[in-house]
Length: 80
Image (cartoon, rainbow, N blue to C red; front, top):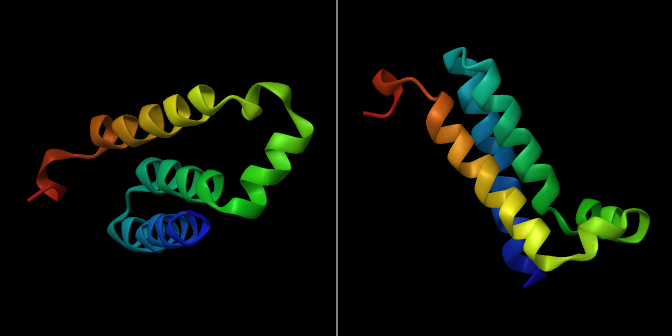
């Protein structure tokens, strides 16, 4: 599972760079947050220091909310 988290986190961080090149600062910031939260070292750090992050439901709801907020803030001309 950690390998999948590393791959997803890295992909989201790389997408941040491409979105910044398009000039979408808000969307790229959300992609960066999502990518960093998925990476196991950061996620483990948050689990150790914050009780609410230990809950799997809280983590997954946070990931889903961030992912859908990307689709809300992305302009329609960039989706094609």
